[in-house]
Length: 327
Image (cartoon, rainbow, N blue to C red):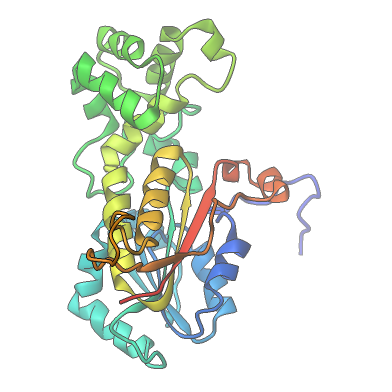
């Protein structure tokens, strides 16, 4: 059998999962039941959880048919092509309900799930495929849809939004300080058809100092991607559904890659961990508010230096987790 030359790099995985050890450690206390992997991707987290937890089954979601059609799954996995923002609908689907009851048979609380994992953002596979249009470093069409359910494409945003709406998009979703200059330059340069054209227009629009740091199109591409896929709405909606679906003692783990996502996650977990919110001058509680969560991470966990060296895309990851303490 021919040997692979030592100098040949290993093939790139479909998607390199981030902070796998931390995810497994946080979900290991779950001895049985169903865990939802709301962002299946290449299945790396699911694979690790199934190996570590022999009495657990995984309900996996991914809005990208390319992900769900390529990855083999076993009898302990149900794979659904869906946006995690639609988690409540997926959990209520009769077929999913039947599967959850069958595969949560050892769980006394089969009406709820034992855990939920979100690994937010774009996958390595989506970034690496130029035809998906996510990367400002490769020539590709202005697409950026994570799945066919997205009603917009990047071309729609770039070529149809007026200056004000483009500026607001870049400012809100990319926290881009040169939002208006870039928007004006894009409108003057229309029509734009490729990622390379867009990246060049953005680079020419920003001051020289900005070009000497990270790629000047990074924030703009992030902003367009978030707008196309309505990502922030999905994060808020999906996280609410996950917390509602958890059994007492169940856990939710979220990995975010930029401050906008992480802020939504942090605020929701903090809000859920608060009990009485009555003014301190009241002698007794009248609000009736009871904490539904116990935060497992007071501050976000970060990937190790070793992991970042092996997978630079993990650098911006922030992991937060909480446990359900009340129905």
